[in-house]
Image 1 (spheres, helix red, strand yellow):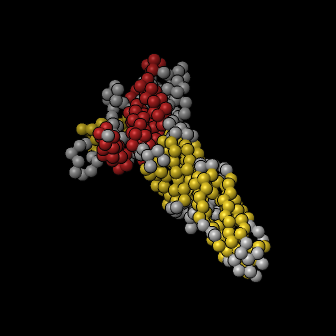
Image 2 (image 1 turned 90 degrees about the vertical axis):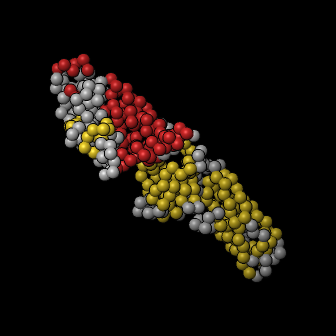
Image 3 (image 1 turned 30 degrees about the horizontal axis):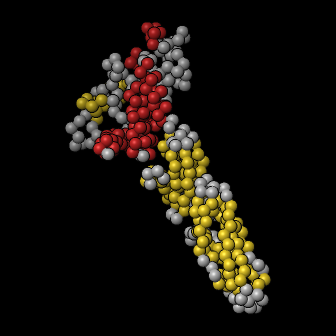
Length: 350
């Protein structure tokens, strides 16, 4: 517990503070030097970039290591914001930087200009060997401005760049992604709030709003988890495998749908007759569902509960007593939520 509390303090007070309030969405390279402060009251200077030190030039290695460690923190704390921050650290290395320059040879213009770098992974035409990870973007400490000159400070292909990048990619690969849409009876559930809850921890891991078409974009979640998408009284369970993308489409009225109401067309006054309600679970997970039966000119309606496996169908049955002769009777099956539409049938009492 103490370790988790400490990790949360570190994540909130350091990681989120610097990545969410500064220009580059990455963590600083060094403290005690540079022109920046987190706020006016802070006594600590910092900088994003550093040059002039053999191991410190370029931020490829530190971004990759930060990406891996922050991703592990997000899993421990079940914090999706941290996971997105982890991705931003690695995205910088693959082109989300002021120069739009990936630091891996083969996917961007990573060319070395000094012949002494043959031993560091350069091939014969002066381009870094395919897949080599160069030191990356460096800069001036005094001005803390990024620079990319393909000199030795940015262009050497140290093994530590590659190994930490491999660690980051493997760590972030534990994630899953979910996107999709929410509707009600086929009509977009537009500009409306929803949450995603982890069923293992019973905690909310994401809160969002659908767009004008009832859709929500890609949401990163820890892979291998079990989740529930919730909108008010409606919910949909889903499992998210590690490293997979899931398209999740939820119709708030059709997770468990009443497909049919079956009753006799003509009955005699005072007769006992059967009413059957057919249902189908259109969701991805097993679901327990309640149906209330309301009647007019008949008695015996009540609420019953049924559990249906994903994709399965089932039937609920009632025994009713017919009412007054020479009048119609009506049976109405109402799903558990007031937002969902019911289904009815009408007959005649002779």
